[in-house]
Image (cartoon, rainbow, N blue to C red):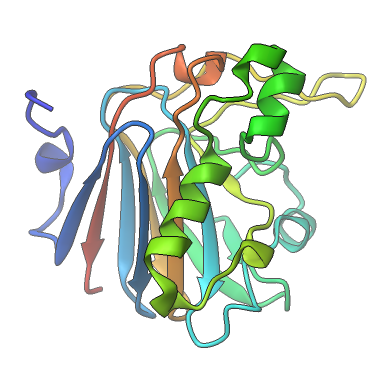
Length: 216
């Protein structure tokens, strides 16, 4: 990317680590308890499909069901606590310049691409492919395809219709918008920077995101 990162303008201090994730690429890494993770939507309207696991026991993972039930809201923003399948706090959102993140829409796959778009979209790269590549290239995290579950779509706009359906709508994020989380336990972070060209949430133009990590 040629343009300077907007994250450099808003970061409160030099980060411990930063990672640029190109459109359609993936990330896997560890976040220690107490560390802060900022996910930056560098150019706007991108979807970061994200999974979290307890780094000490990956059988415990992010649970959309427990998170939605305990906070009494479908959407995530500042103050939301991401809960695990054991209903324990995993991470807390402490800053959010976007204001809404989806818990319901799930991730694209070759199968969903044919259902949502057309049969000839089946071959297109998907978030599920990204996750599978990440765990295949990094066996040290102990994840297998059985560990791929429901996810968070950071920056993605999925309104619920009055009839109870889901509407994959145009994105509400913008260049430089970010969400920042503090880890309540050691976690493994698995992200697919969505490659989906057919989704209006990304404006039909997938773009890079950036991760910044601080010690506290």
